[in-house]
View 1 (tube, rainbow, N blue to C red):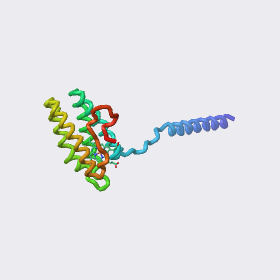
View 2: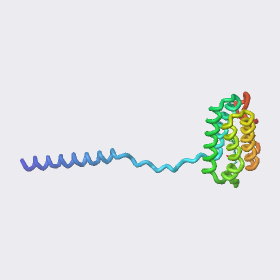
View 3: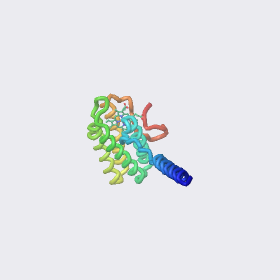
View 4: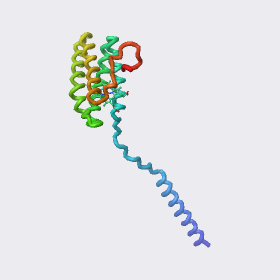
Length: 159
Ligand code: HEC
């Protein structure tokens, strides 16, 4: 009798142990799939560029230097991201075109902002817009026409 009691006790102990082991196995965090760094495509990056360009324009129109400076930085980061992430698109060298067409205009605008001269800032801002459109023409997207975004049109774009 005693032996039977002992062995059934052991069975209980073993099954409790097994239960704990399987429970702790369930509690292990599920391994997460490795997510590759997500790079937004060209159109999505352009959408953000348009957004910051527009706000930059409205800051220039309002002659708010601090805000114009802020949006210039945002646009500058977007430009750098574009250069780093999209080398080619549709057979066009996107990074290289951005580097040669847009970056010099962005640098000139930065100088104008540092000088705090609104006439210079306005024309440097217009030159940035021209560089957007020049690149659209160069990449067969000349129908996407960006403007300064001054005034009431909710988009800084000609329709
Ligand atoms: C390297 C050349 C290049 C430069 C520089 C460039 N773009 Fe573009 N942009 C393109 C191309 C190419 C497309 C079409 C993308 C596609 O086919 O998906 C495009 C598309 C767009 C679109 C359409 C997407 C939308 O959301 O409506 C907008 C807006 C736009 N660009 C704004 C700008 C603005 C603003 C600038 C300047 C601050 C700029 N782009 C600078 C090449 C350029």
